[in-house]
Image (cartoon, rainbow, N blue to C red; front, side):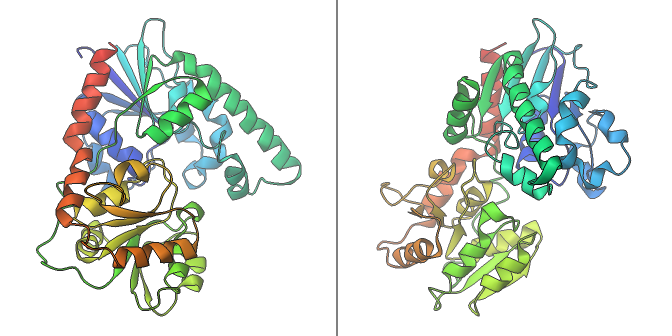
Length: 373
């Protein structure tokens, strides 16, 4: 598409899935300008978007906001008004919170890549209140009312979106329920060039998981499951608020390595027998990265992972699903994986992961834009 392009992103922080999408959007639209609520990237992370003009909202100037910016969520719709994208021909919002609500002028095309309807106002309302220590008392009641208002605001500003795309069928269904709008599924980019199988002919005798230790990732449950398969070794990579719970759940056959570099994570994925996953994710990049390394996945069978891993019912399986988010169910899946004959092939895992390669995201997103411009 010809013309000036603005990309509206909720906030810039430590690189994650949303930032990987933003990087690919900038590859599709070189020269696009980025608008965001707050930019708190470290110096080493700024290289990702070097040369890109980035405009922040009035929130950037609030003293001390970088330490607790999520607590300011109820005021973000107001601060969003300070971002002016009226001079652009195309506005793309890369949104899981407020970016979708950017004001556009009449006749301006606004396409939203919706990572999820605003979780704080919809399905994670209680978790947000709890983490912000606003789940009780007068302040909690006021915060609950404000989040309800945010849900109403979020629903109302949907009218300003010309078309929706999203990262999985799982989230497309959520968008339909929340907004009454259909969404084109464009799976997010995974760096399948970096995550490739190693040179080892055989796998080593350990399982691996890698994640930030937050409640919904259920890393403590994974550690507990390996107490039930005590003859099998588990390596856990990561850190986070739930670190004490994870350490308490880990038996002597579980090794906690803390945070590792991307290269070290890849090395473990290449050598492990299987990658273990317990979250109900919107998409879940980590299981795809594991498959890109030729590594099978053992996963809780709900959420986006059911679209990225081929279960045992497939003619070319790449993983094993378990039906309940419990240690017992996961331990049973590990035993089932151990008993597979023939075993899941590394080639099948790699081939499946290539469905999510970054160049495919670019071409599909470009086609999505052209179909609605």
